[in-house]
Amino acid sequence: MSTFKAPRGTYDLIPPDSATYLAVREAIAAPLRGAGYGYIETPGFENVELFARGVGESTDIVTKEMYAFETKGGDQLALRPEGTASVLRAALEANLHKAGNLPVKLWYSGSYYRYERPQKGRYRHFSQVGAEAIGAEDPALDAELIILADQAYRSLGLQNFRILLNSLGDKECRPVYRDALRDFLRGLDLDEDTLRRAEINPLRVLDDKRESVQKQLTGAPLLRDYLCDACKAYHGEVRELITAAGVSFEDDAKLVRGLDYYTRTTFEFVHDGLGSQSAVGGGGRYDGLSEMIGGPALPSVGWALGVDRTVLALEAEGVELELPTTTSVFAVPLGEEARRVLFAKVTELRKNGVAADFSYGAKGLKAAMKAANRSGARYALVLGERDLAEGVVQLKDMESGEQSAVGVNEIVAELESRLG
Image (cartoon, rainbow, N blue to C red; front, side):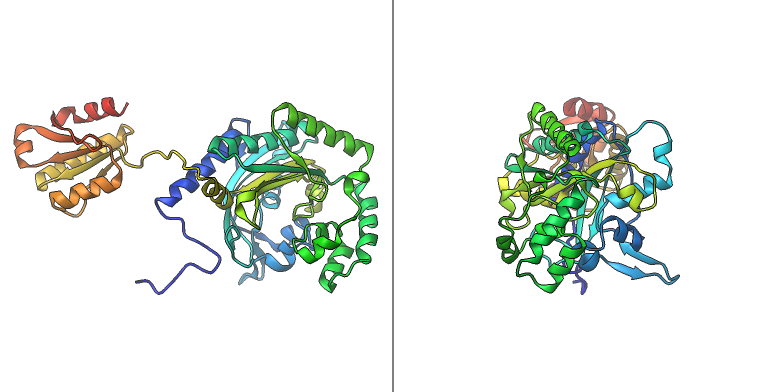
């Protein structure tokens, strides 16, 4: 038995459960591919300053949760705690915004890392699928991304999730609101860390999940009351487009999300069956992020959906995904010559797109048929010495139990016909 275990707050994805995670990733990605989003993959670590500037130095992610380290060469790096800053950095570095049509539409899938107190639905290593539309300020883009996420969740069979929606204003109207909120927070009974956070970015306090803080926020000024006419019109159009698409949502005036780069549209997908870690995904518009990390003005919008929490949401609703069988045919050779012949047939089946496996390790018939059952294969091929002499292989239907002899040279065509 191994003396090593997965680090605290992490988990291993192993069969058969891993098939569900793959199916969830595919379901989230499918609508994006159909809407013109191209796949991007970035390194698992970046310059620490990318996240300090982009995510925000006042956020818990940067101040408490980021895995930062110094390399042997003296570089200050961090394991990526989120995907947007990395994707935008890569797009800028590759000059994708200069290549032609804007927006640049990208989707990604990967692992992210935050040093948090582990609990169900909150891990130190977690998986997300995300999408970013870079370089265009258009309410239709914000609506498109919300609709695509809703479509992905509906395709998985999820029903009991809600979409929370808010506007965080822009550089014109948000400073006025920040001042009003800061003045309000100064009058509350808050600890030193929270008061310090309020001075740097008072919106962070609205995102504080502690009941002792939330109780005191009753009567706090709301950003929607401070929105300028342009932001009101923009938000109104986002709401109209989502509604016209048949996607329901709830207005949440206190929704700010956990990252400093959001402007205007912000949204969150929550599932009430997950307890305290109810957010399964979210995102919003981040029009100033490109400039924060040294790029040109590129208004953008995006989201990230948690694969881990989506799987938990499916479990909470009792949804079982229809997963493709990993093996359609299982070959059982009895004897060395049969082994050689059947291995060649398995190879041929695989080349023709049929998922096939083989009884390795010279098992006896009983043990090999147990392995065939465990594989989930629809058909088993059994080949012994007498079959070889007659030029046939025994084809067994694992569902009905029916068995028939089929010519060795006809077995591939026969299986292709039966499996469609």
